[in-house]
Length: 110
Ligand code: 2BA
Image 1 (cartoon, rainbow, N blue to C red):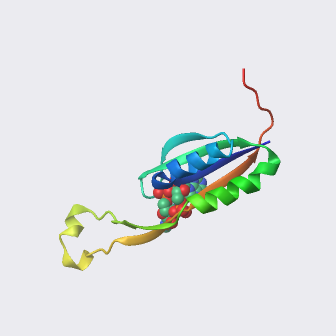
Image 2: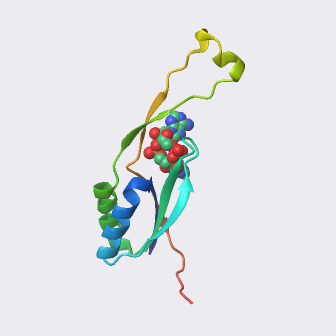
Image 3: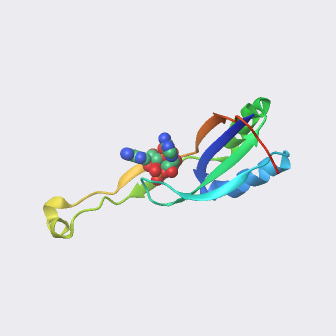
């Protein structure tokens, strides 16, 4: 058995969960925050059989889309007043999905 942890964008999480449930796969959504953008994202936990991992990875590719986001670099107030320190927003590409596949040593539902 494997635990798939997928960090996805909030906008993609609903469609992904619906597709997983429709396939009879179980999933839990945890609301999380990315360390870099400090914006909400979603971590989806999925306990699956080994042979289901590729199916889940394919579903993540289908339902999770990369998007461009802009970050405004933080500039100290004193420096921001100076035209020499005019700072352009930084563009980053977020997602589709950041995926970790872990071995599950033991699974119980009690
Ligand atoms: P954030 O940490 O908010 O990162 C959002 C996006 O910002 C990243 O997209 C990446 O394009 C950029 N980024 C992150 N750290 C950066 C840095 N030090 N310098 C420049 N750009 C940086 P993704 O790579 O697609 O990551 C999306 C989200 O997935 C991340 O949100 C974070 O919540 C999670 N994540 C990504 N890699 C991870 C890892 N190795 N461990 C744990 N969480 C991870």
